[in-house]
Every structure is written in C-alpha cells, then in structure tokens.
Image 1 (cartoon, helix red, strand yellow):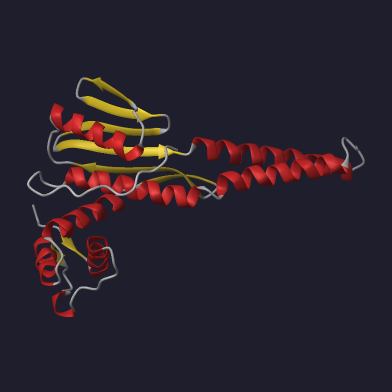
Image 2 (cartoon, rainbow, N blue to C red; image 1 turned 180 degrees about the horizontal axis):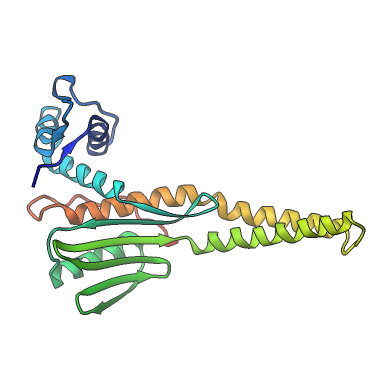
Length: 234
C-alpha cells in the first residue's frame, strides 16, 4: 500500500494541532507531492515536537476529514466521527475505552454487546464498535435533542402566528394582536434558545470525539495522549 502523503494545507493543520499553535512547515521540505508521516515527524524533531504528538495530530486530521454533521436549517444539530482502527480491540481494550468515555463525558452510560458488535450509550450520545474486514470501526456521535426540540417548537409557534396574521388581514379576526405578538415573541425566543447554543456545542463535541478516535487509532507502541476537557452530555 502506498504511504499516505499530506498536502501543504494538511501539513500546516497537523503542526498546528501537534504544537497547539499556528505553525508553517519549512519551505525547503514542502514538496509538490506532499510529505509522509515520517517526514513530518522529522520536521517535528527539529522544532521540538515529539513524533507521538505529530502522529496523534495526523490521525486527528484523518478522523476530522471523515466526520459528518446532522443539520437542521443549516445548524449542526448532530455530530459524528468515525475511524477504522486496523486492529481488533480485545475485551480489556473495550473496558478501558468505556472507562475513558465515562471519565471524559462525565456519564456512566450503558454498555451492550451483541456478538461482535459493542456499544456505549448515554441518552443522545453513542459510541459504536463494529467489525470490518480490516479491523474494528469506531463511531462516536451525538445530537442535541433539547436544542432540536426548542427550534421545532419555536418554528411551530412562528407558523401559527403567521397564519393568524394572515387570517386577521383578510378579516377573519381569529384572535387579538396581543396574542399574535406573544406567539411571535415566544417563537423567536424558543428558536434562538436552541439555535444559539449549537455552534459552540458542535465544535466542542467534534474536537472531543476527534481526540478520542485519534488516540485509539494510534499504534499501541505510541504513547496515548491525555484527552481534552470533558463535555456536558447533549
């Protein structure tokens, strides 16, 4: 199999994640055909970044590129990240992962095993381990149920208010202007309550999932890096 080569933009992203600060690779090593992970690790050594950190950052990029969002009116209502581990997790590996999930998400959750399928769930948060021909696949996902409900109720309230406005304009006089104003205000408040919290929630949850997936996808010989700050269940 041809060794993975990274583009200049990917290289910049990898070093930014690895060093936790903006970084640009040296010009003399930015080749048109890209750089391999070994090349990046060599560059990292020169500037004081450990090979493990570079490998972790590169794996995080892979996970991020394979990510998906579930959207409502363009808003990120759900987040999912997945990665092929290229190995089978043992029972002990799975138990350690569950412990890590409980610590990161501050939730006990529920585990379930059906044959070779394993899962950990906590309300709208889920982690699935599924077998593939080349190794286990890890899927982490969540959707913000409360925000979605708030947005939908807000849209219903705005829709009812619009119908009443039209009815009053044609002379039906189904309700008072005050009631319509209350429906409009309530609808806008509900919609804003759900919509405004989503971008920040989705960004934090995506970063956490990327970090967890990237850690697990690293070869066992590499040091597992500590996770980022825990997130509140969505």
